[in-house]
Length: 381
Image 1 (cartoon, helix red, strand yellow):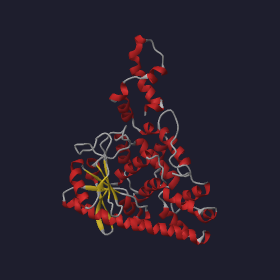
Image 2: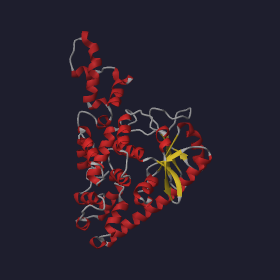
Image 3: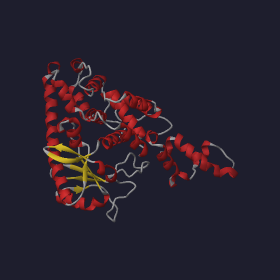
Image 4: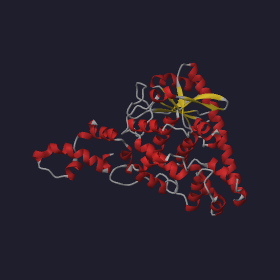
């Protein structure tokens, strides 16, 4: 993603604040020197619909040509949202008729359930979670709708369990993209919790989408998934921070005790704390003071949140530097131990021997030195 100029960054920061915030949108808009760049910045951050909503209220402060460009982008996105909704409803009906439970997430369902309007959120791909046992019949049904499977698979037709947890489909006729997933991951190489339908399906809710009821994530699962997704992708887009903030706004009675319990149980504590801190600091998410205090007292989460607060808008995609890799910092204690104790990580190498010089007779001690080195050295990723 491109680095934004300061004027565009300041405008986008104001746009993601809640309506009750005091924002000088007109003044910030007047400082934009290139609306093409500003629109591109809003597009890459996924907040064009939000930008249009704010600028319409101060349209006298910006060139009419710029407003027309943003309206065109909004209409294009709205069309994509409606197309996604129609396709999603038909796919879900097809799966239901075949006895395949399916959970849509993110995209238009999140827009409808959290933002109150499916066009208020940028349209993306269709994401659907299913049971692994239903993968092959679901694949056949999608192929019958004209989709091509783009994911590489092994010769026996099954995905490689360690490296794959999704099938990527594209339909040449209209460019529709759909991803079937059977596991939700923080990091393919370090995080091996089986977060799938067994976790989210029993507590499912329903959302109203274009007059139809569709399965929807319960608020706690949705919160953890949004925080996990944003953390995995280093909070590159503002829309991911806004998603967390709007979810918290829409769920004032969120069961924080259960959310924290699940986060700790699943090794997602740092992801949850990081996502909520960013949503509160950057997008004004309402969070109880006691809960904010718990998250702010976590030094790892607070340090990462301070970093992304400074860089997420103007330098999206920048990763904090340090001896411990960012993705390792996100892990819980059990996940870190699992990474260290995995078969491929146990055997000492030249880096371990370079860290501490030991005589040959004490060579076995390198098996104790290696875990320490892995946590301190970026090469242990």
